[in-house]
Amino acid sequence: MSILSGSRRKAAIAFIMVTAVLDIVAMGIIIPVLPPLIEEFAGSNAEAGWINGVFVALWAGMQFVASPIIGSLSDQHGRRPVILLSTLGLAADYVLMALAPNLWWLALGRIIAGITSSSFTTVFAYMADITAPEERARGYGLIGAAFSAGFVAGPLLGGVLGEISPRAPFWFAAGMSGIAFLYGLFVLPESLAPAKRMTFSWKRANPFGAMMLLRSHPELSGLAVVTFLLHFSHHVFSAVFVLYAGYRFGWHAWEVGTLLALVGLLDMTVQGVLVGPMVKRFGDRATMVFGLFGGAIGIAWMGLAPTGVMFTLAMLPNALWGLAMPTLQSLMTQRVSESEQGQLQGANMSVASIAGVVSPLFFGAVYAFTLREGSWLPYPGASFLIASLVLLGAALLGWAVARQANRRAGQALP
Image (cartoon, rainbow, N blue to C red; front, side):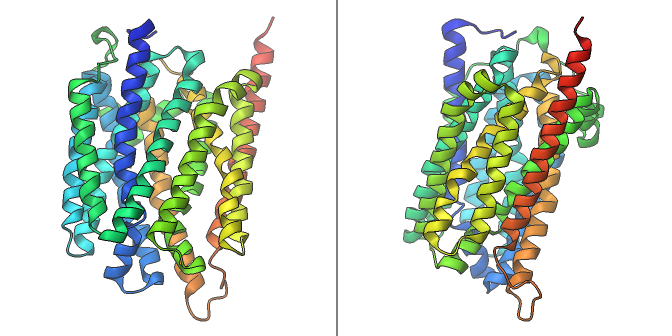
């Protein structure tokens, strides 16, 4: 149970959500301008497709290595110092990217960002510290809503600033991360009591050692695969979304930023408003499966949309997969002890990072291939259709895992 209660717990939830919003605003600001900047250095849209995929893979690869280490460090030293160091590191990284004269500098910036953004494992562990198990789906929904709020403001700001200068969003992002650091330094309380901390161990902190925890319960393994498939599908956005919108509909930073803000607003509504009531009415498992099915429909719609209006309307069903992540997280946290929450989040982030390495490379290559002269797949929206099939597979697997769990629960009854 949490070391905080009553008004202190509510305050702690507010503090961690503000910290998350500030970090995500900073990350969201650069989304509309980073792919065009890569295209400027690369020389063509098709070339930028696979390079952007490599950059996202670099980011995810560093998360794969760093997430379990950061999660385990937070289990030993507490959540607050890890969050503070990470936000300070992000601020320095955005300054580096603002000054980048070539692709190599941008690649270094992506590597540093992958390490520092691994603190998101600690944000989820923080929420697990201060909420009871039955309240975690709602708590993770609030974090998801906070992230989405950041993605509403971030891309809008990035779109506006990008019209002024392609480097301006990076400077603004550095400032936002600096504010997040100062906020955490003076306001954010510690959530993990010293008595509940776990000594750091490289056996648990390396990515493969951390993922061994996922084998400790039959249901955890299945849910880990669902996590992988969900993140694999989602990285079609980071790999090709901005480039596809520019190529297919002629959109620039402002249009892309506005649409991404709409996506964030819808996701914030789903996770902040719908998750709690749906979990209360249908349970974690049913809500998770419904969200995955809705996301599969939405992302297929995006790949088939003939116009920008139809592409925008596809964001409505697509937003439903915001129901899946908080419920998936909740189901997994209920199967480990309080002292293992950081390790679990590190393991989850490692799984997501593996998807983040292979998925952008895959979707970036598919997108580049569809634009090549003489390609046997001359359809740029193919990446979205493939992502939809993967997400559909996640929904079916989630349903099967839930059914198996319900059978075990029924056998356990007298």
